[in-house]
Length: 539
View 1 (tube, rainbow, N blue to C red):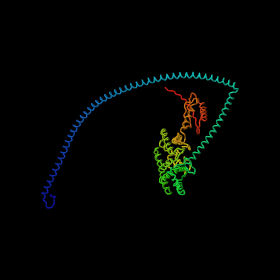
View 2 (tube, one colour):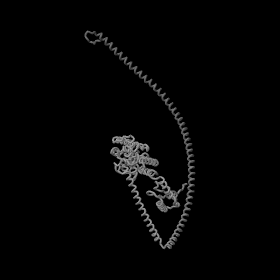
View 3 (cartoon, one colour):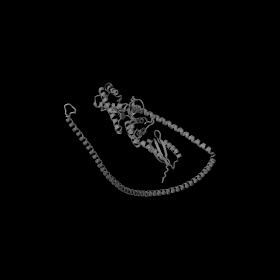
View 4 (cartoon, one colour):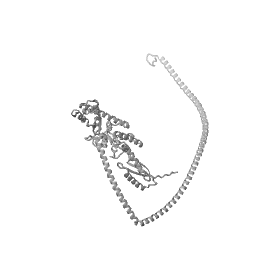
């Protein structure tokens, strides 16, 4: 521990010695500090010199490397330049070759087109020369025709003068005389035509009345009987008649009351007649009677049971027949009630033609014609099958079969095309679609087929042959065809023999000849056709 000088108890010599040591220590430290600073300055200067030398050396080597890189870049650029020049020359040579080839091809094509144009020009020149020659010939012909026309006019005037001298009448007076005769003839023809139309209207009215009455009688049961409204049930013996009548007539009254038919028991041996204008009722009664006869037990309770069984059997038959019609025609997705109504058509007839078979035939014919015309075949068959739907219902619904068919089709959400076809198939409304027209035609075809409805086929064929034979007997007639079931005859005349004016006279003469020599229902349309063709070929 160093004590401070001047302190009490410490000798002065010791203090002086310590102070001298302290001063020496400070001097030494100062010397060492200065030496260290000098050494640092020397080492710093030496480092700077060394760094400078190293940097100068690196800069020199970098400049040499840069010179070397520049020289190599210059050499590489010159080589690349020479390569690019060579490639450019090759590309230019190649392009020049392709261009020369294309030029040659185009020149060849142009030369071909020039030759074609030259040929066309030559052909046009020939055609122009030919047309000029034809024009010259036509001019000459026209001149000759004009000359002949003048001669004809002159000859006509001279003949008219001669005729006026002979007849003592002027041209105007002769015209008036001829017109008066024609007017009288036309008046006579008009009167005859009016008479014919009146007779036809009466006949058609009677026919329509008969159709309406027949349909009404068929749909409505009445107290009158006809041959077409009865069914005969055979009996095993005459004793069965008494059992059917029953005690005090109870059995027969029960059967008539339940079925709604009339049972006629007369002197006919081993037979009983079932009479009704409703075919369904008549069929139910017939089946029930047959079941009772086969069973042998005949009393009111048994009659009720058998009638109910027969009714179910008839209903089943109606359903089966409706399904058969839809399957046969390929018409699907019908409402079940419509199928039943179709089945009821099995028991309906029109002029002896079964309505169900007629509807199936109309569906097939309409489908065939629709396929030929590119119309929807399925829809056409559907409309043809349902066109007589109104004939299926009974007298409970009032109206014509067309109106009833339309109401039923609307009720069961049928297609509007089908509804229009039903409504228009007898011409009640205008057909709005092609299918409606096809159903009209198919209905007429089915009804007009030989033998479809009550008509002698031999007489039908004989009438057609006689009609064609009579028509072919006239001069100038080339061909004659009887169509529309003998309701129309189409006559093809020779154009070089029959003029346009003579066609009217020929049609009139044919109609008069047919009226005088043939017997036929209604009327026959005489259609005279004259065809003139002009054919030329463009070369």
